[in-house]
Length: 66
Image 1 (cartoon, rainbow, N blue to C red):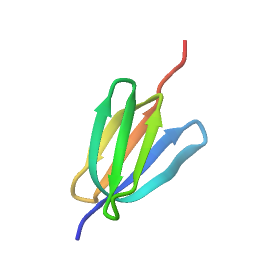
Image 2: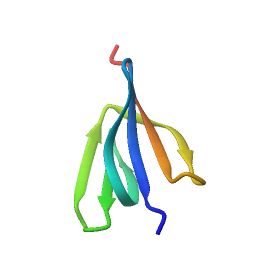
Image 3: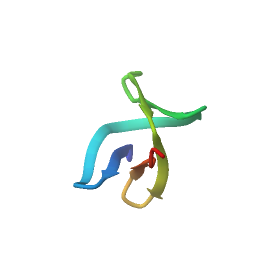
Image 4: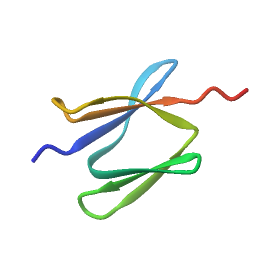
């Protein structure tokens, strides 16, 4: 089964924040991740940077706070 791994790109590089993600939604200023075991994680101040379907990777980028 090819489930997503989710990384947040920061100044120091990429950090793995979730794995085995089956559903992603944007709700206002947040991105909600749902895992295969029905666990949920909400990330704030990030935007979608890239989705690599072949390698099952979602990369989020920290939003610049101005």
